[in-house]
Amino acid sequence: MQKIRSIIRVIVLFFLKLPKKVFAHKVGFILLGISSTLWFLIRVIPKPQRANYPCMQGAAPMMSGLVVYLLSLWGTVAAYRRTRQNILRSRYLLAGTFLAATLLFFVLFAAQNNLPSFANEKAATTNFPVGTGRGIFPGRVVWTFNPEVAKFDGKTGNWWDEANTLQAETDKMLKESLQVLSAKENEVKAWDALFVHFNLTKKNQPSGYTTGQKIAIKINQNNTTSHTSSKNINATPQMILSLLKSLINEAGVPQKCITVFDASRFVTDNIYNKCHAVYPEVIFVDNVGGNGRVKCTYVDNAIPFSVNNGALARGIASCAVEADYLINMALLKGHPGQGVTLCGKNWYGATSINNTPTNNSHANFNPDASGKDRYMTFVDYMGHKDLGEKTVLYLIDGIYASKTVSGIPSLRWQMKPFNNRWPSSIFVSQDPVAIDAVGLDFLRSEWPDLPDILYSEKYLIEAAQADNPPSKAFYDPEKDNSRCKSLGVAESWNNADKKQYSRNLVGSQGIELNFRDMSVMTGISKTNNSFQVTIYPNPAHDLLFVQNCDPNSRIQIFDLNGKLLASYNLSNNQIEISHLSKGQYIINITNKNQTFVKKFIKI
Image (cartoon, rainbow, N blue to C red; front, side):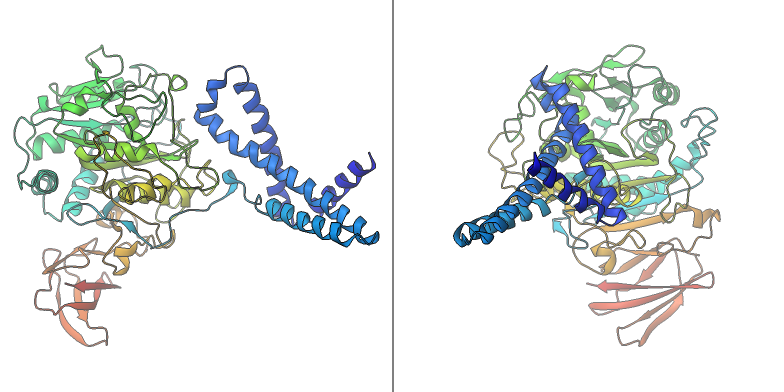
């Protein structure tokens, strides 16, 4: 009894001597560990298969972490006491043994200092890209910000009402995004460039879209329980209609060749009624069908997975398998267990799962709590021939975004350029890894305390190096002995203020984030930030394109020694550089009495 009192006294004194911030962290660690342990035992003991649920997989590492933490602390104190006793009795051999044990327990104790759900660590290294970029401009992600699109005050009507989310503005955002992604001057040429690049890359045929080819659009309707419109965050109806307008009116895709689907959930009335009224021949597929929707069918065992994934659904929606092209339209939000739900996670809803989440397996969705590399299911989705490898465009809908997986949009964003406004953004890319890496950086920077955010980029690191991943898994989602190649490029930006990736910093590898601030065009905001003027592509051959600046801006090009090489007014947002020798240069762009300085490479 006396020993127990002594150990408790040491523990209490240890905590009392901690700084307030560390003390709060430790107390939070213990309380969360206790609650996780109770929750795990209450749920799993009556029904052991619940151990595979995401919430249980999230609770398990916190439970085990607390146990190891307390045992190592007890072991340190007990071994230290034995060391002292044996020194006083001149038993030096035993004293040395217990001293070694003291150090071992202490190292184990110190290793438990970081609580995963409290931490803001990341496995991806800042501006250290891995993998091979994809796209016309490899690794390019276009971020379009339009503060005029989202007018929801949190109280009046629904966030998706036309008065709260403006259709004309989502139309503009998609148009700008596609043109910047492809470096084309209109949507017609932009879509053609995307289709040509896809067919050239996948089939070695430089052909565009051919009439009759099918396109399936995977949306995220995770927070739906019926066809009745949900107040929770789901796919934005206006953005879906913008995409349909662009495909039908600009790309020339017949209505009947387009399917909008979420195989796992419900296409709600706010989406169906809005889009069907304009394009009645577009097909809508969901989990149950009815009310104008088509009930989803599946191709059984279409994705056998690279490893034994237990009870995880293996069927893929027939509309995806039968499509010639897919478009992945994800949401920008957090998710328990995985940390985030972006394009990689969005593919789960294309499989033969039940529309009640607790009835489904989520095997190998979550990263290892200690950061160890291991097989990740999302990589199989991204590398599957009828999912990721059939995708012509990735789009993340961040008009409202969410810290949690569900709920009504409520949290304005604080980082620049949002400044306590809705994120009002969309992201587009041809690179599935790069776009999720960008989305992750935004979510992690806006909400550092996002649940389970620690190591959430592990699936991106695996996907970027799918041909030789850190886990050493053999990614072969079709089980045809054909190993996946790199599925894209992953890295983290330099910081949340500048938001620059390797290609933004005059690198030849990595991600290139192209920012389109539509408030500069409309005069809505005069906020000054490093993204108001951007140039692309970088490196470039003959032409540089300039975004977000006055058409009469003054252009000056210098060599690295400061020698002026050219000076003229901007014309058609293009800069002719064919006359320059290969190398690095500095460009000054004087735009409305502000001068922006950029570096670029001529290749």
